Length: 368
Image 1 (tube, rainbow, N blue to C red):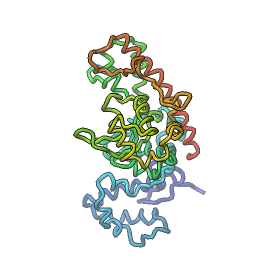
Image 2 (cartoon, rainbow, N blue to C red):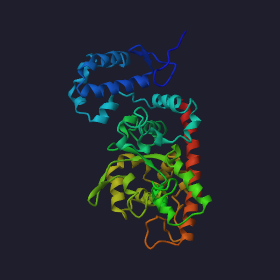
Image 3 (tube, rainbow, N blue to C red):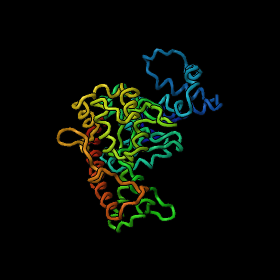
Image 4 (cartoon, rainbow, N blue to C red):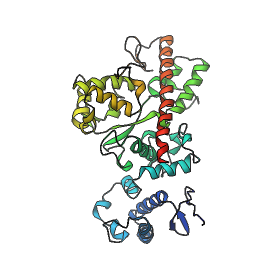
């Protein structure tokens, strides 16, 4: 029996026919989303095309008995914003998304996920982001699906990857910072970064820094966190944004050192963090308000390297005086002291990213 290959991703199990081409369910749902966006832009003639796909995709048990075009006219759908409308008909099944990604982007081998550069998805509407101007590696569609597959049992009500992202209950976060300690790329000197250039590292260390820059946007450097906001100064902050804009300087170990007593003992030494944990995002942290709970949560998120032998958050990146390095600090530290901090940071961060990637991939294999 001949198998039809998907016109987009090449999957053999393509049973949705549209305009003499076949699509797998994942790609067909994506096609519906694109047609729907055009429909709302005024191309009403697309209604019959949406109808054709809708009839093949919809669940026969669905209570909706009207046709697709009538469904499109429903008030609640017309009120969706641009990106939400584009996602509305995408399959919520994270496993379907992962399998399509492995076929199309990883040459059918989940192990290739370890070195995959999420930056390459900036203009990819299927796995990346509808709007490139809002692109963020830790918030791509495929990494949202990964969050659901790996951590839906860690946090409650995290079952639909479309319901993760900016403004949602949960959002992805990048664990290890780059700009804080190394600075942003210098467009006039490719391969150089404004911050670290001030301290003139030798060639061997600079090569290591460049290699690390490529690892920042890889699988092992992403995690999902609760995302509701609180007022902080003149703006609003989430756990994601708040940890990057204060004395923690975006260092994840410093964030966990503050989070542990706040969560376990109800310590409100940091008022904003207390409100984020206990008031706005209490639904997510409810099961972790004990020492055992905190340790269990961190281990479940595959962040064991940030814990000591007793399950407490530990200091990985600060020096003996409790200071973390950031390239704009004043007065500027000595070259020797700063580069010591850089080496220590790379020693830990490189290992954590690599180890987490391997563990995440092993867990994802069961869904492929």
